[in-house]
Length: 400
Image 1 (tube, rainbow, N blue to C red):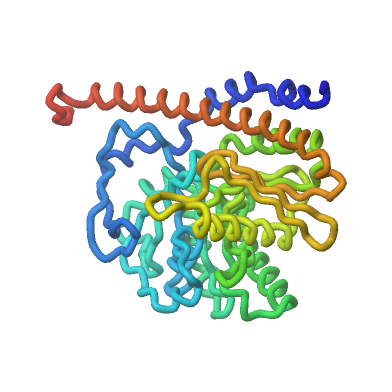
Image 2: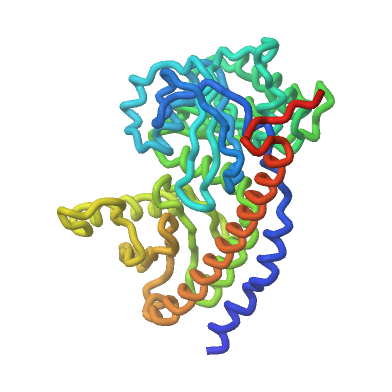
């Protein structure tokens, strides 16, 4: 049993506490509590409404992800497919976005951020557009390029957007989605990616901005590529990612598991995996397994008078593939699931795997606890800052 116990000792939870308690407030923006932006309704229809950042005591500081690109490049479709489970065919009827649209994504304590969908016709030189305030609180900027259209103008807009954003916030992660590649052959996809990569980086080099790093992804809403790309974008915004990867490495090395993913069940974004490479086929199998579990649970897991999600602490699934591989899914938290790949002979030690999983789940809970401590500290700091700038009746103080 010493091998099993080593899992908890190597987790070094005291180091997890220290790592997270020292987290910088890189995503906090004081302006977020007071500024007003145009926004849509609850499901981000963007028809009307005003978004007010009015809660000064909000304990959770969420990274901001900006979706930018030319008109009809597929920005809103990406958001609807990934986070609203809209069928790709239904996105054909979406109207073009004509105002900045902001939405909170809070599927789990790790997958928690804001998505701002920008209209393609936005003008950075418009004096009414305060790009400094927007970029200052941004964690990632996703620029969507339509691969089936002439992308000369898109590359020009990309260069302008990136250079403006970098001057305001050098810590932004710049992500380029080469979108709508489902209609291209494999050779054509690679050629498009190589051409766009070269042109974009050449433009930055000509401007003396070689230090700006752009990440490129081939995406389509008609397969799992858009989910995998969003997974990698979101992972960069998770301060606990190294801790999660380390815990997964310890878990699989002590359990005879070949590959493990930590999935957000709602969005099918994997927030962490072990250090071994990820291949697209494995990721697609994981997504299909989650769909199977949710669909079967919806049919057989709820009685007629029950409501809510069919995914709970008892959720578990085992699928035997025809190549002596077993897929094993276990519930970690209300919104997170662990999906593992292992050989049949390794699965015979299911008791060992379940014990190690219990240790892994306990470690994940400790990471959550640390995150909550950080959020409570931020809430206290925000409350103190708010009280210093307001009168007892809540009226803001204005310096003379």
